[in-house]
Length: 223
Image 1: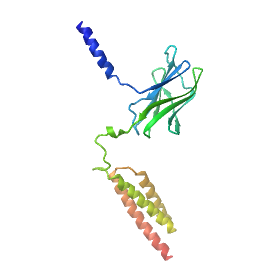
Image 2: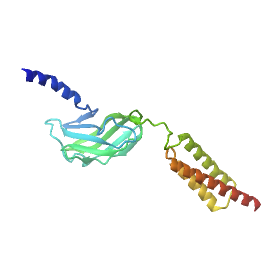
Image 3: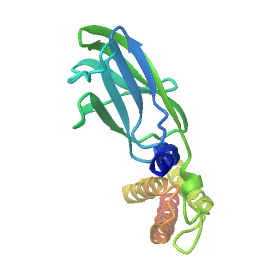
Image 4: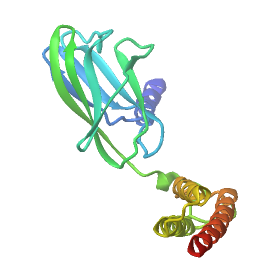
């Protein structure tokens, strides 16, 4: 009796410990497709997988090679991307790697034939969330290893302005124009970066470009 009572108490606890996945499903004829994220909750900018499970409605048996004659795409708003769906070791289970880059609702669109059944269906999957709530230590945009993001943005604008001034002055020095354009490109790539070494380096590049541009403009005025 004690063993039975203990089992009754333990089973609900075990069930509560099993993660609940927010997967949705669609049925077309005798085909059932369940879809969702491989890692939940899905977070923006984090490697994840779209997972699909395909089986027969009538007997629950998994369907192998299900997507040989279908196109599977992931949709976010008006944007779509075709997925490279691969089978897993478990029959009837498939996955496709993806890094979600926007917050919000995603959907998986399946179009083709599975087990001689024509399929044209869409499965909405869980919303992609922000990873900020899970970050530790919290990111402040500045710190011992970085500088404020505003500094990077301002530097980028200054270098853009410098490149424009060089062009407006119709400077014929290829080296000055090339240096200004290269510095602007690097600054753009560093937008959002918090690496102090890179930022200090780009400041040095900016100063060098300024010197080249000033000298070139002075020479052009003399001529």
